[in-house]
Image 1: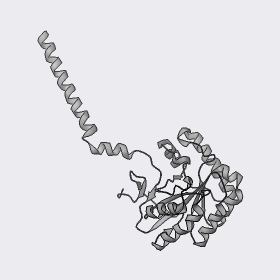
Image 2: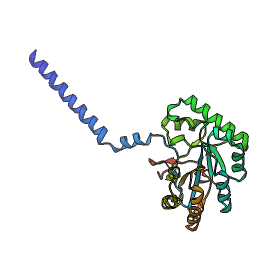
Image 3: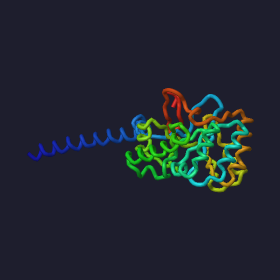
Image 4: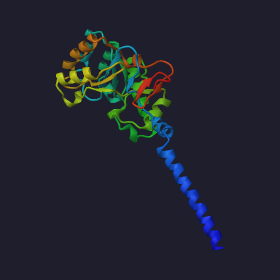
Length: 255
């Protein structure tokens, strides 16, 4: 009897050891499994894979309104169309500026209704928040937004999934001007012009202290380097696409 028990114990130990080895291999020795897990994370669009020299200038509008008309005038003088992500409460306060942006040919997209922390909201709260902001923008511009930028740049899988279910693309950025930190015009210009590449999305703010001063130099340098500046919707790829692990929108099979 004791011999049989010892035999069964040895078999059980051997099976347990084999199971541990298999699990170790699956976790650490199988790149395919690891990469699949990483690829499952939902990402917004940070930039776009393009063969041409196209990029987008974007401006978040949530608080002040000191420089909006100045930005419209500067962009207009260079024939540049940009994308403005505006908060619904900002639309409530400054509908004339929202209309001016739209009338000048710029895209007016949503930056939420109240600049909430979206990763803390339920899917239903997100839908209600986005719908409210889009309703306000459409009432002023006549065009319903199709793009969204997360307040604070914060997101998680359920935020991206909810926006995707609403047929909206979530847009981040790969070049941050840091204009909200009150950098000098020269510092902003250097950050942006050194960072922009084909398919880049640049982040500015409509009420940052030195952005109007830096913007002409930025546009001139980018255009002189052959860069064409377009609204985000024109930068995005048509049809099927993939997202690589950095948030770059790519053609199928190239991520």
